[in-house]
Amino acid sequence: MQGLFGAYRVILAPMAGVSDIAFRAVCREQGADLTFTEMVSAKGLSYANEKTRHLLDLADGEVRVGVQLFGHEPQTMASQAAWIEQELGDALAYIDINMGCPARKIVSKGDGSALMKDPALAASIVASVKNATTCKVTAKFRRGWSVGSETAPEFAKRLEQAGADAVTVHGRFAEQLYRGSADWDVIARVKQAVSIPVVGNGDIRSGAAALDMHKRTGCDAVMIARGAQGNPWIFSQAKAALDGMPEPSAPTVRDRIAMARRHALLLQEREGRNIVRMRKHAMWYVAGLPGASKARGLFNYCETFEDFERVFKMLEDAKPGQI
Image: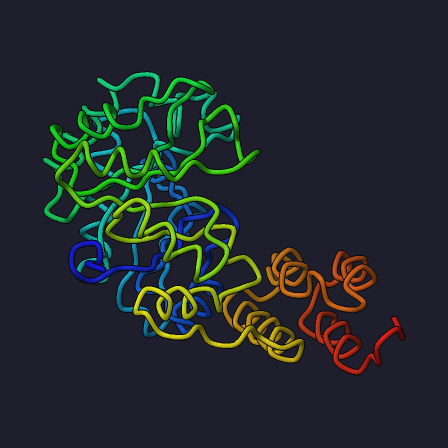
């Protein structure tokens, strides 16, 4: 399998509130070829918003990262993309333009997947960002806006003509949000429609699924989002499957708790009391484990690493049927 730009085959998707420094670290350790920051608002950057700029912080030793930018004003997108390229330098793998997020607070402002309703504006944004930067510029979008109205192949061609170096396709319509199943066949149709690399995204929850997507669509790389939540091992599993090797064994209960503990420590070291964002990650790590229901209730009250550690220890020490 030829990777995106010859280097990236298995990619962690940008996820708001999820793909922070700590999560990117554990995903890289488990085999992700490239990780993305949380999606970044071009408008927020233009206002020099410190909270927005903080999303671009890199961890010590983080040598390469992708940045996804969202907005709908070509000039603002271009100027902020140029600023990101200047700030990150060689650490910037490429800039991706968000044309796929279906969240109401995003699309109500004309951002994210709302751009699929205006292909001319979407193409103008790509052209503007491309002209303002020297890095690779890509775009991530969905099957289409309205359920039953597939526009992705033609949309991809418009973006290619505007200068996009690659595209990522999620197999749901924007109106579906995350309901139902992703249609991988649309990824194949986009791949046939353009000559630039195509990344497949949607419903990859195992190494076998990553291989199946590649075989069915011919995509140049796979991007994993929700399938990595609480499961960074999916990256090593996907790479093994794509290489025709046996997948590593699934993590044991102790493996999952140990990874949750390491993730919490990384967050504490970097964020201090912002470790409360570990609550959702902890719930994902322990989903399906004995005692997970009780643990989820306790995680909701955790405010320090020591709080999380008490719950992790409870899960480690529990005998079957005890919790």
